[in-house]
Image 1 (spheres, rainbow over the protein chains, first blue to last red):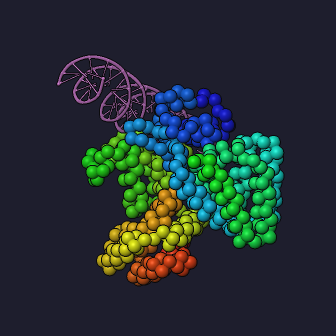
Image 2: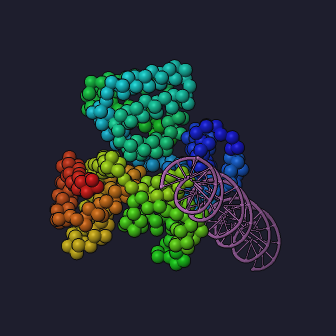
Image 3: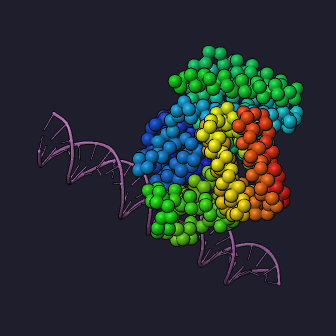
Length: 220
Length: 220
DNA sequence: GCTCTTTTGATTGTATACAATGATACAATG
DNA sequence: CATTGTATCATTGTATACAATCAAAAGAGC
């Protein structure tokens, strides 16, 4: 590293800097599924010693982004169809809970934030900026999850989404009509605004499922 | 360490042995919430160097059993009322999903396993063996979760339960009538056997909630 | 006696050195 | 030619050494 991309990173232990850096590279496809993570090579590339690299890898391991093979070191996690299904089901379960809780706790400021976030998402869609699309879509969903007010559920959802982010990213690349997602978001906002939690739950389920089906099809 | 409690541990990297050992000590209360984990002391006590201790701590950190304070090291995680609520809500959400899926996928062998597990639980209850009670209760719930067939959900539930295990353990100590839990299990088994998933979901929700309420009350 | 500095010690964070192990290449043997 | 044994090498696993930092104690100034 030698220099810091973000000011805030300057105060983090190197293991966390390594963790964030490698996570980024895995999520956005620079490090590909199955690729081996060799400690010496990484420590040289990142300009730190092996110790923080190893500790960073331990964190990635628990996050589910790398798998360890004994004496063979760390590999970027790849995902089987079954694992993907399991993650998606878990995500749907928790995000369904979240949108329901969101309906109960929504207020004016939060509601505005949802609309703003979807506008930003619409903007990135019109620009066809994939990375920004992925990020701003995440941002929209995060407002719902934040409003639900359950930190643990949020933490679990972040972790689950990371594990499929790579595939979602690829999926968006090939999507015919991404504006459909914007309209789906709008419907969800509407249901939340009307406090129709059953409707919102059903919409978010469909919204998530349709993406999942596409990712799933692509994986096979 | 110097010797191995379990044969299987002999082939694990020391970081995993440290991880398992410390997790055990945290779960069963030998290491208490808030207690500081000092690397040198641990490495001397466990008979290994600081490196595997540090890596084991990284794993515990992600598991949510320890929290890191910058430059102050690792502490056994304590839990606030809010955090407990969040964990419980997440658990209820996922375990509700699991029991529902379990109803759809149950077969004869699994059904028998449930009954056997509850018999074992009843036995430990009659013996007033707290540790065995906690373990065999977990075992009963695990059969339901395993039958649901979603590995990710299982993994998440294991992690969530670990975070409240200490408190559940304390709670069982002071429980007036633990045989009630056995009867609740029986009802759940019955509902699963009759494929009445709505009933089973409702029962498990109440079963979990009643424990949670007691734990929650105790925490305050 | 109180407060602010300074020092010192303890502890974490980081780097490096050493050991153990598994993979690979090559040679010996049938 | 195939197969097995062996040597070598790359890489992970583990231990230790060094640096940075924080906290508490000691001391100086008022």
